[in-house]
Length: 265
Length: 280
Image 1 (cartoon, rainbow over the protein chains, first blue to last red):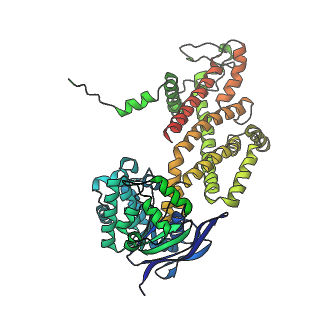
Image 2 (tube, each protein chain N blue to C red; image 1 turned 45 degrees about the vertical axis):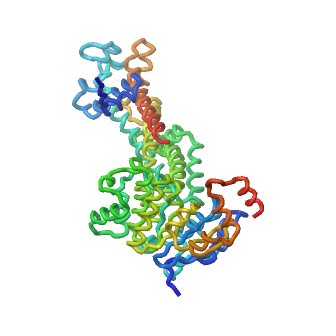
Image 3 (cartoon, each protein chain N blue to C red; image 1 turned 180 degrees about the vertical axis):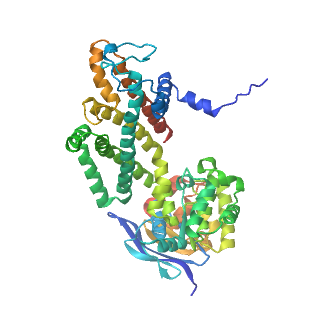
């Protein structure tokens, strides 16, 4: 039995009568990469927020390295240990960075919290180098960077904690296509170098193909299909997965037929 | 030929700040603060030296701003009065802003029962007019600068705490706060290092406006003969003393303090406006 970096068992979360996440289970092998795909409102972001601890699950549990991840912790040491389990990169980097804080001080603040009493200068340079930012970017504030650069900063900040798992919530969705490709390549490189596991949440099937080994497809809070990425995207078994794939615009694409297929699903 | 326009940020900032009224007021405020700081060395006469023979005289080389009904030099009283008249509102603003920010932030960040308790209890203060509260406290504890300052600070606290609460609520919903939480920072650290600096411009702008109000309220109190002890020069007291002078047609000793108070308010509100425009 392979060792898992992250496991979710029967996660459930309701908002009033709506079951946003309904019995979702998945497993991410150590150093592996798991995609969660689905349309808006399918519960994939809620799942991500439960995994990192920004939301509480009504039922089910998250296991990191086989140990149960506490839903809420008190005390500095446990809070930091919890942060080192899972880190997150958010969709909009401009929103997820404090506009007042420069790139270098963002990284220094995190390093100072997790690794106090060290000289952080070489590590800051290493992190910037790792995400492909030059030393000139270090003094810039988020407002002075491009979208791609900002997302690189957000990735560097998450990596600074040296987490076991990195949750990427629509991490490339707010970027334009050429920058998306750069960031996806960067993510693939980082995984080779650091053996961090990815939980890659997206609606973009092309991005999933690039960076994930396995994928689960979510619809209305439930997992409808799971398997290796090439299998699921190569020969989708569930009609919803086929619908998702057919919904990507291309030559000869007929939106009316997609709408019809969606109604009959 | 191409013309090269060089922009000088310092000058542009002043020009963008614009109206002549604002500039005049800004100059006045700077002048008063300097004068208040240097008052003991600047005053030409003893502010309490009475010269009944020359009462209500107009401006003269000896008394540049004239003398009041008791024959006291207006300029000297204005300069020394600036100290009590500025120190009082400063105390009100510092105390109400610090306490208000603490209360508002705690209420917004924790939410739940703490929010209810803090919000409702500060609203209770709203139900009580600030000046009345001050008069009550002075009636109990007697004259002095401290009692009215504390009373007004309590009265001003809810304005600051409500503003802070709504700002922190909005700031808290922004993803960067979630990002710092995921990174393992404690709520206190996030508030002190990120949330408060981000809302500070707006809160400070409100504080300057409060400074103007507090100045007027304190001047009003001493106009009523409360607060500042009788022989201490104070603007509010000067307006009160000058009231009879106006009736006799010698307005200077009454008008000058009013002009200065207006100047403070113009500057404060202008700053608040600019900050409000800058933050989205």
